Length: 262
Image (cartoon, rainbow, N blue to C red; front, side, top):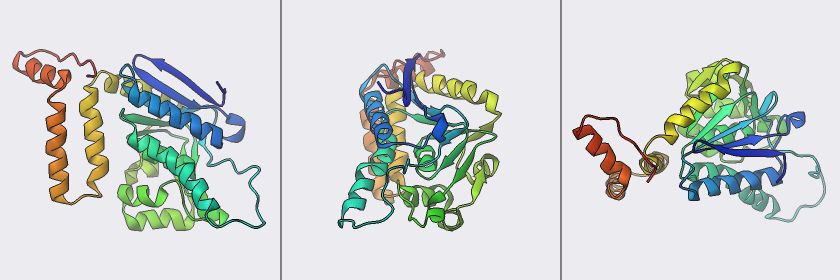
């Protein structure tokens, strides 16, 4: 396996680590494919109950690796859209659709698709030196990788436009105030905090969390009738799980529940 993406599973947590610190972890197509595959594996593996995405070095992800991309010349209509659809958009969709909760542990600069990779995660932890940059406007580009979908849902359309129109660097502390980040921690505490959060998720009722993620992600695109129907259906499905029965039984019996992820 390529060392550009490190992977390990510990205590039910799948750790996915971008490992191109010399390039500030600018993500290549091969890395994208590897992350997509690992997220699919996490969904299918009952022993994996949470995922953490992080990186080595000073950067979380400086965006897409554009080396080798032609800057001029004739393009065939549809090529760019196809590249984005099969690349950046598949990566972001893989995070959103992963059946396990995904934590971003942002150690440094997250720019472009790197910022969107973090924002697509269910929970975002950021080290104090981290920053987020909607870098596309600096390159004369339209945001891709789901940015114009994610940001308005996270911070509202006016804030999203401000971030995307100007492309200014947003410090982690400001990102937390905007609601883009759950928690900012000292750099030395990032891995520890990510592990603590992931371990808590891994000890929880995995299917209930998966269904909750699905409901929340779909809620902003649904009317009330559709959302309420989806909620009732999710609860119906969840009540067939061992963990749901354990949760109710432990409450009645005044004891701590022991969830097994099924």
